Length: 165
Image 1 (cartoon, rainbow, N blue to C red):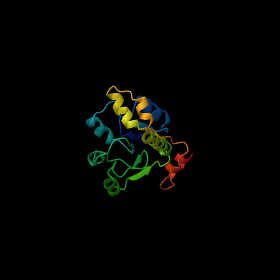
Image 2 (cartoon, helix red, strand yellow):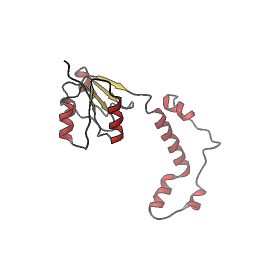
Image 3 (tube, rainbow, N blue to C red):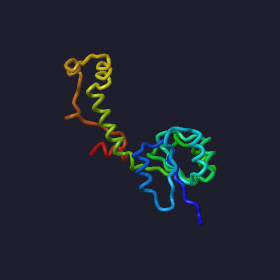
Image 4 (tube, one colour):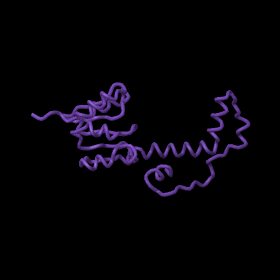
């Protein structure tokens, strides 16, 4: 009889994320995840991991070295080069998977938020409010509207297409 396969969720998951992952595991798989931040426990669990979901925190070479059974790393999102030890993974023949579609909508929404924030001077308004100054009328003269403006998007990848929508 084969041992169950072990999926390690590298960041310490919120309880709702942990429960969702446990519900969605295929038969024969077991979730390895910390209940609280504990590096010694993380290294112990990595020793059992066959597959790993990374994202939200940097995976170190020492953590990779603690995972002798690891066969695949699924990085949440696309920007993985500075988040996981790519040379170490490649040297061991461990596959790297990304999820390019998963974050495009949320990054597009953040892009719109930042556009509005720049136009409406959110940073200055926040700074003043934290000093106890509500300068609603004083900022109106400097605030701009996005309505009626032309917005230029550099490139037309997944994120820019969502911004256009």
